[in-house]
Image (cartoon, rainbow, N blue to C red; front, side, top):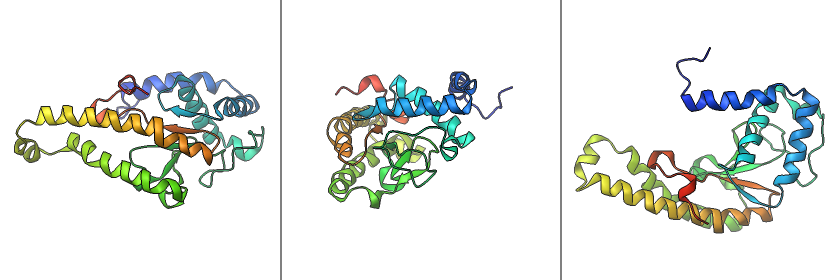
Length: 202
């Protein structure tokens, strides 16, 4: 039975993930290793169906400690993540300044911001600092909303600006990480501003 704390979306993803629970440890490890090979060489949208499947399998593998058991060997280009020792597949999000790059296996920080390659830090910092106040508008309190001449219009304008920034991340910033990682994932939506993946055109 689902708990009250689970959203309908959480329950749906749990249903999706049940397919991987039928895999034994060896089958799961081999599927992950093979899929990592398919992911190599590209910057992937977080919303991509293949990434969705990989994340579900990776989270289950983390629960079972698959990578620690060495059932399968990942492609050589993937080094070990310091957070959980799974292959390093980083996620770039709007919270990169505070959270760094996020591990797709354990959801912890796998690359702190200060360890992001130096030649990328300035551009990433500038992008995140431009993004943050736009995202914050979705979380204004009543006093801030009432102080705006037209809050709904400002919210819509912020969403439009965020669409542009996410497109910049997907087209220009994140692909540069491929010089340092075999594959990288980027967050292509902002649920608070109701910016959806299909709104981001590359």
